[in-house]
Image (cartoon, rainbow, N blue to C red; front, side):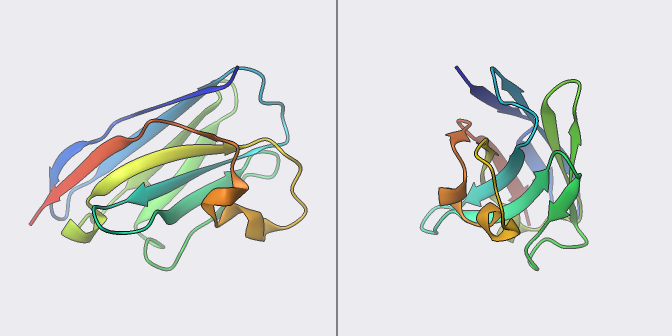
Length: 128
């Protein structure tokens, strides 16, 4: 049984920072990837960041490059999302996701369909 638990969300003023955490438990293997997505009211779920565990390669969309950083702690099976220079457009529920299937293309990390397990989400609200 795999479980993902997000934490670290909250309310922050524009220009501030938050650090989200996602702890994974269960049998997930060693060749996996974890990602972050977000969904604001009235919008589709949006890719935010991903990390491939074995290589530590990271992936970001242009909307967050230079502001957000994904990292992982292998011993804790935990992924982090450091979010800086937040603005109101970043307000959303942020979801952690885990892919455990083998991947032969980095393109699999950019869509929600590429992941096998999801957390319940943590709310990030940015005041402006």
